[in-house]
Image 1 (cartoon, rainbow, N blue to C red):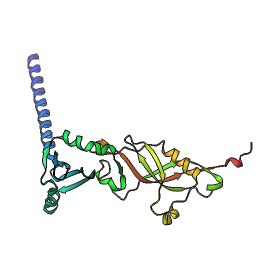
Image 2 (cartoon, helix red, strand yellow; image 1 turned 30 degrees about the horizontal axis):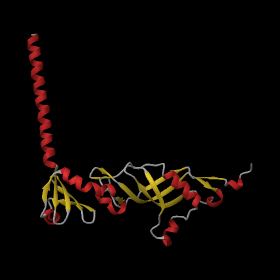
Image 3 (cartoon, rainbow, N blue to C red; image 1 turned 135 degrees about the vertical axis):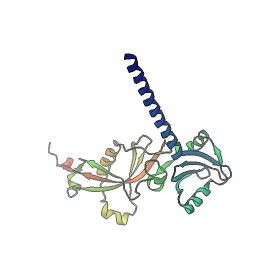
Image 4 (cartoon, rainbow, N blue to C red; image 1 turned 45 degrees about the vertical axis):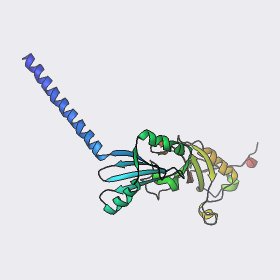
Length: 240
């Protein structure tokens, strides 16, 4: 009886492991089928390309060595016109290995500061997102000089920040696309308040950006919204 029980357990275990391995094998086959990555070079045009194919689309990343520019496009496989036009970029290319591809593009990625509004589509974290969304950072409890800002319970300030490869805000500058129109929406602030905001921003981090899995420096205009602002007496108002 005991032997029968042991044999039954072994058989059940064998069947369970077989099913588990079979499921994993099927998943691996599905993964291989739905995602295929290849690398190419075009010595005539000095380009390096990476393609990522799924069952519905082909994503093509192109690095142009001549002007150190980057592009990324999506080709829909079920759209004949889109497919023919999109895949034409692969003409006259030669297959290369991934090490050659990454070693060729890495120096350009490492030395470039990417503009989030302009380069949004090529960055890993942002190129699929809605381009209409603006980056807004809220700063809470900034102390505002009562003489200059007693009427401002809410302040919107336009700035440009630089974010390093770790996501830290390392540089901040006042920014306005059009001074004649933006000053209505973005109040001109004093140097003292601007210094307070800049110092606060430099203590902050945001999720870092990357390109093909390589961390990059990014610069972007942002809107800073000061909430729950408090007024404090200026130094001249303080009686010792």
